[in-house]
Amino acid sequence: MHIAMISAEYPPRWGGMGSTVHHLAAHLKSKGHKVSIITRRNSKKLVHNTTSSEIHEVKWAKVPMHFTRSFGRNAVKKLETVHKINPVDIVHIHLPMVSLTKKELSRCKKIGPLVASLHGSWRGERDGLMIARKMREPAVFRNPNDLAILLTANHYSRYEKLAATMANVSISNSDATYRDFINRYEMMDEWDCRTIHWGVDTELFRPMDPHNKSDTADRISIRERYGIEENDLVLLAVGRLAARKGYSTLLRSFKKIQEEVSNSKLLIVGRGGMKSFMIKQAKKYGISDNVTIESSLDFEDLSRVYRASDLSVFPSYYEGQGLIPLEAMSSGIPIIGTDDGPIPEMVDDHVGGLFELGNHENLADAIIEHLTNIPSLKEKGKAGRDRVLENFTFEQTCEKFEVVYADLIVNSTDQS
Image (cartoon, rainbow, N blue to C red; front, side, top):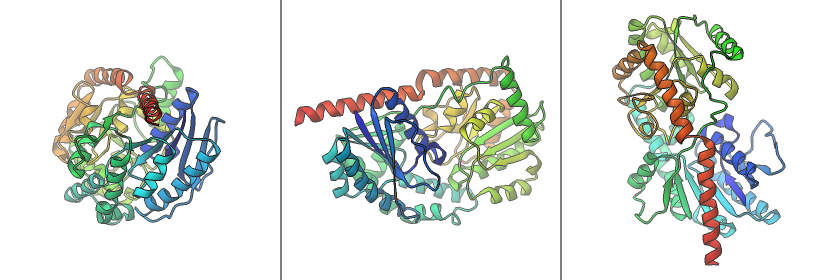
């Protein structure tokens, strides 16, 4: 098969969507398929690492939200060029960050069966920001991208509904995303949509081996880097520093956590425009000496940080699926996540715990309960790793997509 993917995010350093596209393409290549990835032109040259995969970069207007239209137009033109050179069997678009008109979607379907991955919805993103404002998150109206989502989500949601409707098959990344489209966009009962959860790299994100000298050295090095003593308990939060990620809820909760667990340290890893606001908040709550914000790490370093931590927390107000909980679980680290959206599809009391969305007191209590029961942390960490290996590896995810592609090709051949 020759699969052409249209994704505004690529490679993995651009976010969760980029990571999932990368792993899906890698698996397909390993199975002997050809993959062409059409993505936004990057300031850094992308590496074309195998002859069986091609990366095609196109121009896009660097304007919040509007980039989805400019990228979409240019992506379809590039798709047609790729198809002329080497016929495409499947067209796979990754929503919502590409906005296509009915005519452009029809051009895609003339090339081959159309698969639409639903990574979340613009209306869901908007409502996540509304919750963030309600929870007094800083910078909701100062970040150009967030402001654009607040003002234009309804407009751009028309494109994602159209694509999901016209696709031969839509694939939601969680049952929550499926319900999101059913409820927000009144999708018809006969709409062909299936849920395939994205998985994670279980070789990269793996538990610490206490008998491995390299792992032990990494743990010591990571803790020294952030001024963490050997007896300290590390609470880790990973994710973009954006309003809807719930960091104010986390910082408010950490004040109480510090009072109950004095040797706790909070490490936040993520990049974005909220860092200065979060630093000010930490000072306001009197916890700045025990809070560290790391702007950015590559995946190798991030995997080491997971292994050097004791507990992970994911306070986000909205996600399509959310890969961070799975990365933590795969690393043998228990996870505390929100009781809303897709998180309960991955997290429960066996692998960590859930707290009421936006409730910093409830979050603090859940974290304190875990940090004061070390044997339980270890048990839940092992259970989390087992769950990921059983249900959430990227190999399993990609095999399910491969079946979808093959079925579509067979059906399209039968109908021709």
